[in-house]
Length: 495
Ligand SMILES: Nc1ncnc2c1ncn2[C@@H]1O[C@H](COP(=O)(O)OP(=O)(O)OP(=O)(O)O)[C@@H](O)[C@H]1O
Ligand SMILES: [Mg+2]
Image (cartoon, rainbow, N blue to C red; front, top):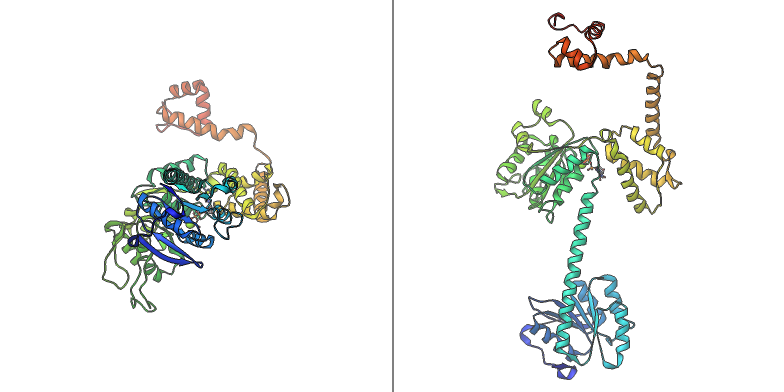
């Protein structure tokens, strides 16, 4: 059936909701399946016909008579497609098309035009409209166009989802490290991320414990649910229990209203408990119960809640020592010590410093709108000779500071913090002093030689013949050296 304003049919009362917006009327035809299509036209009779068609085709049609109404509708609803008459009043120079492209770049717009205004429809397509239809609208052509547009919209949606996934990966890939020890950490993260296992991390401040905890969460099926980090050391011991498990009004002085704790808030997600040794004995007991039975009660309440929460913990002190000294529950220690991730200090993975520094350089150049090309060789040497007590956090701050302060195209020595320069230079001076006058070569080699001979003797049960053979020296030479180094065999040198 060809369609024009005169061939339209009246509204079906049972399915039509009427609301108004922006001085124009907006009519919503609710339909559970198909696409959601916004139709914009000042011709109410045509709108009704199109709405009727959408309903029959299984789409949800939202109709409006003005550009303002259309934009308001799009603000409130996510639509798959907009069908707009090119002559809609107040749409001078494709205002709606331009606004849609600016605010919802993936939303498709189809232009409807009368036979005499095809040039402007062609212009609209050049401006980015998906396609155009001419009046009178042919039902078959409209059906095909909508199918094509919805398929295209679904491909765009998929692309967007893939892009988001890629960005998520990038977020995880932001954990930088090429040294063997960091690669081992990444393998472990990969292996346990999507499991139920409780993870305990150990590492000095700034080594990336929080970053890895987030990475574990985003790699698990819990990624759409909350990730909640609680720094147990930053909350007074008396408040931590209520912070984690919640309380009811009147549970303690100052509990003026019920409070939902982090474990309820994170339901379905992950709770990351940093500085776990700071947790009070009461909190430790409750935590053990959550890990064992998945149950807890808020402070002052008899109501038991079940928690579906993955728990990750971190400490920068030796937890075993805390147990031995009675500060941490032994049963809790064994319960949380399932998967252990050890984050090495930066000074023990010097080879990661250049790539971390480059990573932070790119990040902070973008953040501060600076253009710095890299680091001088001298700077990289200074960085690799420093001991980084604040680990990666300190390196990150050092690079940000240099990006902000430098006047050079490369980060130079003078852009590094004076305290870092001083520490490295003092260390170098001390080292130079200690190696200024080396011992004669014979003396320098004595200690390694003694160790080699002793090891060979041990391996050959102090049998001098076999040892001399293994070391490719004659028995007399071996004997002389043994004498020189005081290496008497356990049975008095009779072998
Ligand atoms: N391997 C890494 N790759 C990239 N950035 C890192 C890495 N490790 C740490 N960082 C960055 O260093 C900073 C400190 O890391 P994070 O907060 O995870 O350390 P932490 O071990 O949790 O420290 P704290 O014990 O003080 O809580 C963060 O900005 C983090 O993004
Ligand atoms: Mg942290």
